[in-house]
Amino acid sequence: VISIEKENFLRLRKKIDALKEFLISGRGIDVFIPFVRVANILKQAKEKKINFGEFDENLLIEEGEKKLYQFYIKEREKLLSLNKQNSFREFLEAFAEWRKPVDNFFDEVLVMCNNEKLRNNRLALLKKINELFNLFADFSYLSLKEIENAKKI
Image (cartoon, rainbow, N blue to C red; front, side, top):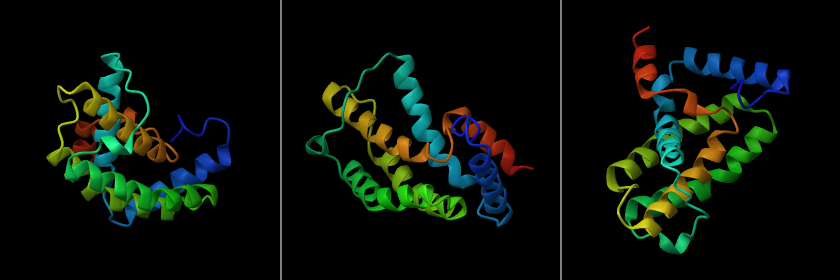
């Protein structure tokens, strides 16, 4: 959260309070797994110096990627609005809905496939999604291992 809200301490505090309330409510740290998965694959692409360019809806061929894109389109405006209104608790509640579509995408679609055009488009789709997630926090700072350890506390 701090990496995103460097200049507005009031928003930073509101986000941290919302995150605390969200976790105490029992929603669980598992909610953040999709965001970490998306951030990690984008980080890997960056490390490999993959320049994937812009997203093209016409290059969606597998059902899993089509469904994820449709979900993104459906949820995008809601997240943008909640962020603009500083409704961070509701923003986190909306995050919880992303788990299944993102998990299904990774289960059904090979992002780093041999077809460069498809690979780059899939990465571009994940970048669009990650930009929404980054409205709240930069999840690339977390690892799946950290989430597993947090669940034990």
